Amino acid sequence: MAQIWNALDHVVFYPLVDTLGVTVSGEAQNVNSLDEVPDSSWFTNRPRPDGSEAADPPLVVCDASLLLDPDHSPDGSWIVDHGKTSGATSGFRVNIPGKGKYMFEADGLAQPELPTAASIVGAAIYHAAGFNTPCEQIVYFKPSLLKLTPRLKYRHSNLEDEKNFDQSALQQVLASCARHGPLVRMHASAWIPGHLLGPFRYDGTRADDPNDVVPHENRRELRGARLLAAWTDHWDARDANSMDAWLADPGSAPDGSPGHVLHYYLDTSDALGPEYGQRLVTMRLGYSYILDWGDIAADLFTLGIPNRPWDRPLGDPGYEMFRNFDVRSFVPDEWKMQYANPAFSRMTERDGAWMARILARFTPESVRALADMARFTDPRNTAHLARVLEGRLARILDRYLTRLSPIGELRVEGASRLCAVDLAEARAVRDVTRFHYAARLSNGTLPVEVHGGGEICVLLPHVAPDAGLPDGSPARYVRVSVEDGVAQAPLFAYLYDLGPTRGYVLAGVERPEP
Image 1 (cartoon, rainbow, N blue to C red):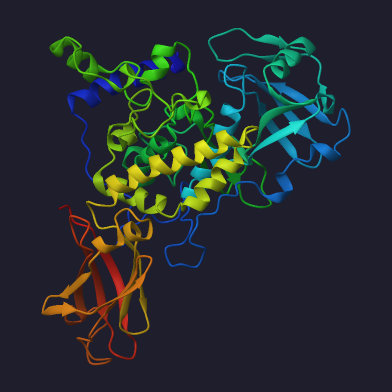
Image 2 (cartoon, rainbow, N blue to C red):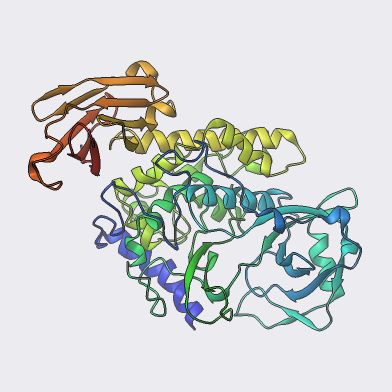
C-alpha cells in the first residue's frame, strides 16, 4: 500500500499542486554566508572553493580496491547469491571474494550499451558535483566466472509474486546483455557500506535521524540537483533511486551506535534518453509529466494546436542510440522529469545559479572523459555523447550564469586583494570581449586586475587601523560590489578590515536578483 500511495502522490497530486502554483518556495535553508552549501552527509564540495584541488571536478567514483578484474578471476569464483528484488532492469547480486557484493545489471536488447553507459556516466557526474554515489563500473566478463547459489528468488517490484532465480533465469539475464565476442557487458554497482535504511524522500525529514533537521525540499543541493537531472535527462530522479545508510563509528556493530546516516544517489540507467515502453510516452519524457495537468489544460483550451517538442523528431540523424537525447530541443528551465519532484519544484534562481557554478567546472576535456567512461563499442557514439553533453551543459550555463553574478570562489589574498573567478568567462559563456569588470566601495571605484580565464582581483584600500577597534566593529565593515558586464546583477562581498597588518577577512557574499 505504501508503494501505491507513493506512486499516486507523485504522479497525481504533486503535479496538480505544481500546476496550480500553490507550492510555497522561498530560499533554501542550508546555505552559509558565502552563498554556498557546506559539507554534510548529503553533499561534499568537490573541488574546494578555496582552490585547494584541481579545477576539473574529480570523475573517479571507485576506490581502487573495488575495481573488478575479470581477466584474473577463476571460473566459478563470482557467487550469484541474490536475485534482483526491485526495478525493471534485469540483474542479480554477486559476491566476489576480496571485493564484496555488487549488483549486476544488464542493458537489455532494445538499446544495447546505453543503460549501462548511463549508469556509469550519471554516477560520475553526480559524484563530481558533490553527491554520494556507490562505486559504479562497466565490466566485460566470461559467464563461466559466475556460480549460482541454489534456491534464489527474484521479482521486479513488491506488486508481483516472487519467482525462482534458477539457471534458466540467469541465462535469460545474460542473453539480454550486450556482448563483445565471448564476453558479456554488465553494469556492476558496489554494495553501499553500512546498514541500509531505505530510500530518502525529496520532502520532509527522517524521524530516525537526529541530524536531519532541514526539510529535504528546502535543501539547496536537492533543489539544485534538478539541473544535474536536466543535463543528463535523468527523468527518473525519484525517491526509489536513492538510499540512506547508517554508518556506525569504528568499533561498533554495523547497526550499532554512535554513527551517522549517509544519503546516496542510485541508478541513473534511465538517463541519456533510453526507450521507456510506448514510443509516444518516451518522446514526452523531459518535456512533460506522465500526468501533466498544465499540458492537459493548455491542450483543452487551445484544442491541441500548439506544437510540442514531441510533435517533431527528437535526436540527431544517424545516431539511433540517442534519438531521445539531443541539444536542439533542450530548454533547461522547462525540463521536467516523469512527475513533479517537491525539491525540484522549489528550485529558485539562486539554487540554480549555485549548481551552475559547480557545473561550470566541467571543462570540455572532462565532458569528453565522461563520454569515454561509457565504453561504447562504436567511437562515433562516444564522440556524439560528448557533443550532446557539452551542448546541453552550455545551455544550462547560458541560462543560469547570466542573471545572478557568476563570480565565485572568492578569497582574500595577502592583506588587501579580493580575488575570485568569473565562471561565466572561464567557461566561455560569452565572448571574452563582452566581459568588463568594475568594482566599487561606498566611497568610490576600486581597481580590478584581470588575469584571464575569469581570474580577477580587486585591490582594497584599508579603512581601519590594526588596533584601537574591536574586530567586529562596524567601522571595519565594508561592502564591495563587483560587476562583470555580462550578468544582469552585481556581486556584493562583505568584509572586515582588520588593518594593514592583519588584512581583510571575507564575511559574506550576496547575489541579488536583477
